[in-house]
Structure formats: C-alpha cells, structure tokens
Length: 385
Image (cartoon, rainbow, N blue to C red; front, side, top):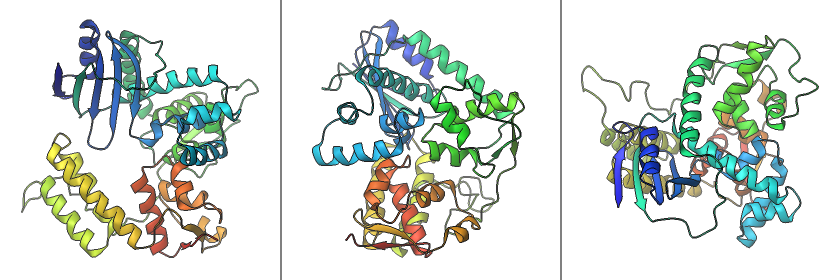
C-alpha cells in the first residue's frame, strides 16, 4: 500500500500516529522541495531516519555534540572516499568513538532528524509499504507518541525562543561568564565557546555544525540567566545577483511570480554564467511549488548545469583554494555566514573536495561560495602540487 499526501492536509503528528496505529512497515519519505527526509518503520515502530540535509548527517551531528572534532571528521571522510566503508565504522576502528557511544549517537541523530520535520509547514509525503533499506538499522528507543510529544514541545519552544531571538542573523553578546565549572555537555560548550560577540547565530550554527534549534536552545538558557544579550543583525551588503525581494510576492502590474517564471529567469542567468543568481531562482521556484514533481526534475537538471558551469569556471574538486586577502583585511569585510565558514577552512593545503565534505552546506551551495569568492578575487584556485 502506497500513501501519498502533503503536510498541509495531514500533519506529521497525525501521519505518524496513523502509521503507528496501523502497525505499518515501510519508508515514509517527506520532501519540502529543498530537503528530503526518510523515516523507517517496522510494525508501526520507528526504526531510524535519514536526511538529505548535510546538517543531518552523522558526521556533522557528532561534531555538533563534541563527540569528534572537525579534524576527525575530515580524516574519516578521506578514508571513506578511498575505501567506501561506513563513516561510523571508520570512526570506531580509528578509536575516535566506541561502538556503544556510536549506537547511542545514531539513535539521537535519527530522533533529531524527525524532530526537525515538525517545523515544516509544507511538504509532500509518500509512504512506501514494505520498503526498507537493505543495511542494518540501529533501532530507536523512542516510540511514536514520545516523538510526537517532543516534536510539539519544540514547536512551542521555538515560538517562545523567538520572542528573545527574532532572527538567526542576530549576534549574541556575552555580558557574564558563559561557561560554568559544571558545564560538562560538550555540545553546549562548543556553542558557548563560539560566542565571540561578533558571530551571528547563523555563523555559530555553521561553525559548530549544529542545528538552529540546538544553538538557540543553548543561547536562550543563557539569555534567561542574564549572561547573554541579543543585538540586532549585522548589516551585510545586498547581493546584486540575488532575486528581487518581491520575487515571491504579488506585483501590481504582472501579478504573482510563478515558479515557471523563476525557472525562465534562472535559465537566463545560467546562460550568462551568473551561477549564484541561477541557483537562487531555482531555489525560489522550488519553494513556490514544492509538490510539483515535474518541476523538481527540471530544477535538478538545471542544477546539474550550474555545477557544470562552476567546473568550467575552474571550481573543480581537486583545486586548492588560497587566500588572496590578508586576514586583517578579511576581518574588516562583511561576509555571509556561508562565506565566513568556507573562508575559515581555507588553509592553503586542503582542496575543495576536502572542505566540501566537512561543510554543513550542500555541495552546490559550498561550490557557489568558492565560485563567488574566486570571482571577487578574495581567493584563487590553484592546481594541486
């Protein structure tokens, strides 16, 4: 039995309860046009989950919780590329983590991927009956009722935190000691240590490989203790290549912008070699019509053309990025959180592929940052020695 629908007509909580009550076995696929998540069930109980968002990958989750370092992740990813074995197995064999802790973190990561779904307001879902991965899954300990209750709690918590943290572009500023002697949670420590009165919340999310909810939860606790204040967002120069702010709003003369119109604009930018603008328009088109499967296929094909264009402009995985601006000059410039993350990982020896693998950004978003920085002269892309 295959079930199809969308979250506007059937909420995730209702859907999960229905699958649980019916003791269904199979894979629930939920797609919002940008991210695809899968929930695996057997006899109505959740086995595990997965996400296409890099921030939901196991490696980034382990870094965010302070279980492994970014250097551990980079080494493990390099081995995985060479040998093709599971990341967790590499980390256990290398002594970075023991099997018991890995199994525990796999369960926690699977739960976090599901909790994130409760924040989705739109999304298309398919349930594939009796369809499960052919690899072993570490069963989760939480039942569906527990998952739903925690998911709903997080929705309420997000609304409450939003009263004090209105935007992830805001900058947390410490007004008291942030690290207590008994602050033993390494994930919390990582977030608090990243508060330098300059990084925005989005910067901290990228720097620590953490989810927005987790970072805001940590900061919110310190705000309530009177140890952090939130200041207004930093001003970042608008991107002249970005779609107009009214792209998804009604226009008095031409009416609402359609997904097809955005696709057409993306194709124009693609032909002109303005790849970031092309990608932005493709993303906007997907957001306008997230349930359109034909549109999704067109977007995927055009994104492949964007990737090919980036390669033609020299953004190849084997290239080694080099800073062409002094660190002092960089500090005086305004960069997006994504640009800041990539710039901070350029060391003169790591190639693009290595940096992309440890980046919580998608591959295309990471490559677009390299392209933009290269086009502006902030970095150069050298052949490997």
